[in-house]
Image (cartoon, rainbow, N blue to C red; front, side, top):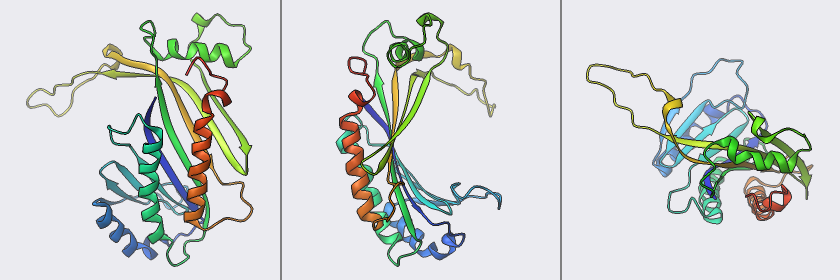
Length: 249
């Protein structure tokens, strides 16, 4: 198993002035994280979730919308195969940043979400595509009486409410390809044929999303972050059994 990325979302009541009000805090955060601020030009009627400001950092980005702060983090390679270390890496980054952004009680915090993209590479040499990898999942999780070789596409998205949290799961096959691209001297672009690239890895990808949106009385943002991280860890611990994929993942 490999953690491809961790996303931590801290939502607040929509506040159109958040970029201006928190400008000094964003500048300080960019310095603290050794990041670079990028102002994003978006239409005035764009959804509030869409980023208006981005801070690029070494292992990901911090995005600011009109109703959320969001970290998208890629764990360092030396910990990416360790879920606990990967989630701790992202949570610590968010923890230290959100403490400053919510310092004066504004914006008005609502709920927290933690999402991990998990890849489970296939261990059998005969699995050479995302369809090869996902066929056993299709056979296990559906009652459709289709020949497995006829399968052209499959993904499953399902959610449940548990312990006062939402747990959402997305399961699909994936393939990774590798190719070398050389741009001839004097040219600015080159045509790439992805179909001709060699598949280097295939497997099953699981997106695990846990959030505290059902909470009737929100906790303070940092306290809520800790409880959602703990719930995500619990969900990861029972992931294979919860999805009825024992022996496949």
